[in-house]
Amino acid sequence: MNPQAIKVACSNCNLRELCMPMGLKPEELDRIDEVVATRRKVKRGAMLFSNGEKFTSLYAIRTGFFKTCIATEDGRDQVTGFQMAGEIIGLDGIVHDHHTCDAVALEDAEVCVMPFDRIEELSREVTALQNHVHKIMSREIVREHGVMLLLGSMRAEERLAAFLLNLVQRLHARGFSQSELILRMTREEIGSYLGLKLETVSRTFSKFVEDGIVEVKQRHVRILDTEALKRIVNNQSCQ
Image (cartoon, rainbow, N blue to C red; front, top):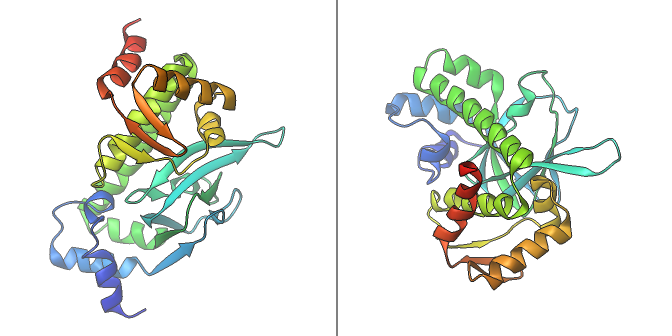
């Protein structure tokens, strides 16, 4: 890949504000462009990386949607997160130099490969990049705490309402609608992530439809009453 192609891939990327630090000088951005060595296409259902694989790179998602999951002792897949364009994936590998989960594409996707040793090296010189990497790690910790709270104390309705609000908020930050979304994951995968059985997820969606909170047509979800979803979640924190 020639340097100019890399430059277009990073400097002029419309997701730059989501996965790169703000306010970089042109020369700093040029140096980061050099780090993003390649792009990789991942077909729907294929793995970006797998549990136990040697950790070498972080990945910025350019297009598509991923789920991360781990195999439980009884052989089931436990979904640990959903990641979308503009988010960084692969942080799980930093601690032990190998990945601790599988990352599977939920649709055809493309990622920018960022070799971690190069990022570390550059972080020592570009303070904004170092701060940004720390922020990404911190956000991941906060997200995990949120999931623990979700699984530890919320009822099914509160879990699904929080999930939908979080998803639509993240999509809106990428220029999508504040009220409509296409679910890239199955009801079963949502259930695995939220610690709910498939029938509970379906029943809760049906209740939201009956209450006039959402409209559901297969994977297309339209939020009719955002405030109602927020009330469902906030009732939990007021108990």
